[in-house]
Length: 316
Image 1 (cartoon, rainbow, N blue to C red):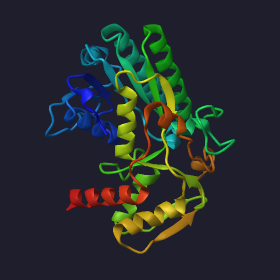
Image 2: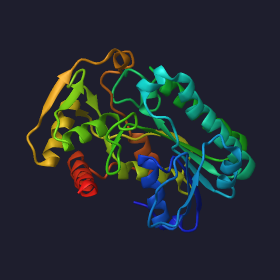
Image 3: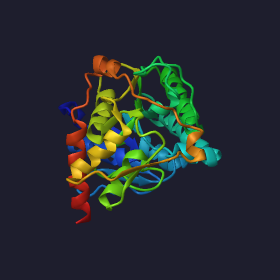
Image 4: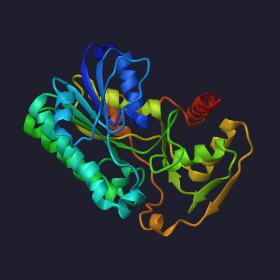
């Protein structure tokens, strides 16, 4: 739930053309914040008063103007795809590390009192030594993207310490919901499953269908960002998560949301994925519940039902 304290706050959302960023920017504007959406693809945010800026984060002039006078920055802009990062490590570095360096430099110059809330990933933990994995779990990134996300986390913390302002890092797990890409690197596991099921295809689980994962509905994730960015929120690094579900059970829940019999098959992991697989994983999110009062409001069943309804409405 977004609270009245957002009225007239000046907020920058990077990655505002993306799945989560677009949802976050729209919700903040509806709550009264003065939002600027920044992305290399112009954010399409009809029906809002959001100012849109179309540029790369390394475009220092445009970025500086967008950051100016902001009191809060949500940094969601990033290259997507753990597997892609292994094939294109330089591109992933430029987007996730140098883009963050550029943003933080602009914040230091033009909005030195601004808090930065950063979208990170649970992938940086690597294979779990214990479950559920809390924020003190060993960090052992299995792929280039996770290495770069860890680096960006350190940059965000360092910038905040230098400016003597609080920071927030949210380590996200599998996010799904309306507006999610259903193909390409940004789709992820959940988007690919939803896209195949809606198109009438079998869902293919790559690797072990019994693996545990946790899944968050996008509005719960947006609520986590908002709580982390509220005035007076403590600094910290937090996992977002939910009750663990096996991959096959998630796939079957997608079909139940469609009102159809499950069509699920399995296939071996491709070599590129096998090298970065982490096995069972789900997050301990007790710290964010304690510190920010966050917990998932959507069950898997209710979240998938709303996702299917919205996706069907968009294509009808």
